[in-house]
Image (cartoon, rainbow, N blue to C red; front, top):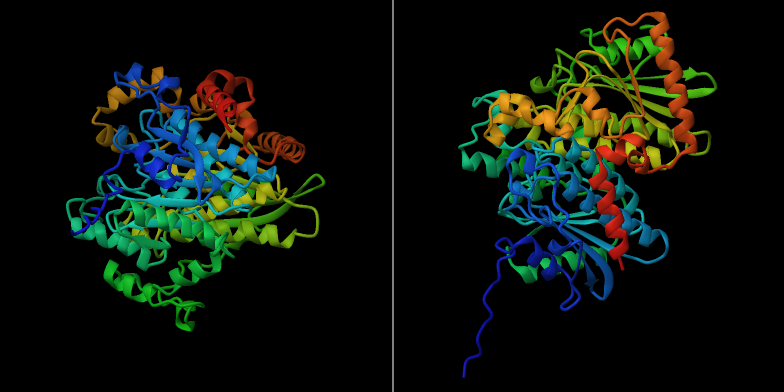
Length: 569
């Protein structure tokens, strides 16, 4: 008699709930805030979208290798796996509770199963805030236990959630998985078909596909699409423990990699061959830049609000600056406080053309990480200086080179650095003086203890341009503007964003482009107060949910956390 050989079971084809159950030891699956709790998004029905009772995120407790674990699985079949207020609160809340467990000596293993296009555009800024809170919890949690991520396939992992994936201790992918900050269709919409042809499937796989990401070091393990294989890879990741240095902290390594790239002769296969051969330290030739970085450090560039306000707050344009031509960084004093001011500014000579208008691109993300980490390292034995992120960023850079070279990882490095600084006791304050858009805002500003903003024309917070958002959601711009009147998180103006509770100071009556002395002093006073509040307040981002505005503006986020805490074992 011939025994039957068990057939391979596809992990990709499972729904989120079954994926979570497969990762956990047999018989230990226990769902938190399941469908019968009926915690639905309150923002979809007003847009004539049928909500789902678990809002597309499954949170399950159980055991992995006999040890306590939580698995958070995104359902890509619901709204493309988009993160809204409820789904984001479930994701962040579960990580926050796992962090609490580990802080109290109960080792809890976190596993993240990604199948997501990023922020749910219909809820926009609710998702943006949630992703910032997810990143904050991950950076804190990684000190105790590995945070393991899996990108199996179907939707892949895009948008702000790709930055989250870049924070994982170990990232597992199948060949069918995809990982990138900007989806091919969005790049084509924003930059044109000449930049990225979204119909070219081979181009996509050679840019963001699982094999490409693994070969170039953006994913740690490439696995077959099989439940047993994926589960084994997750178990192995926990057995290896917390890595000596997370990928998002390897700043010098990646800046060296970028410096050694010849942008004129760059494609997926070439990069895969070159970076795939790396073993240990970078080869010496990668430390040299054949193309240059664009401009000189601190060189005077185009006028932008980011530059105007950095110079205004620091007392003039002649102060010494470090960083790069597109990331300005200078230290100054504010009363008794030492302050590091950081701003991203336009650089018309940027070697990456898609990052010449003040966007956060590859060099910008890694350089932000560098100048923030320098402050952390320099102050390790003394008073932790304050860090002020001056925010005027039109978006992340949309481009083929950016995706191929891992812009999601560059943004993750900046998130990691700001969160690390905050958790180490550096007061981090964001001052929004212009645009605060999407992945750029996640990388530069949204990890702050306190957020201040000018109430002035041109100051806005959003996830995507209206034109691209209309394309993705299949609605007209006029329809999107009507939705914004009903759903504050979908609006672009700073007052709507402030109504969500994350802004700790909204200041009107200030000329954002040419501030006078009295206006500058007002902002300096507000910064001083914010730094003092950050020093005496919590080091996490929990204060964003305790403001008067948050009680109504993000009531669902608060309710999810309360209910989740009640059910947590």
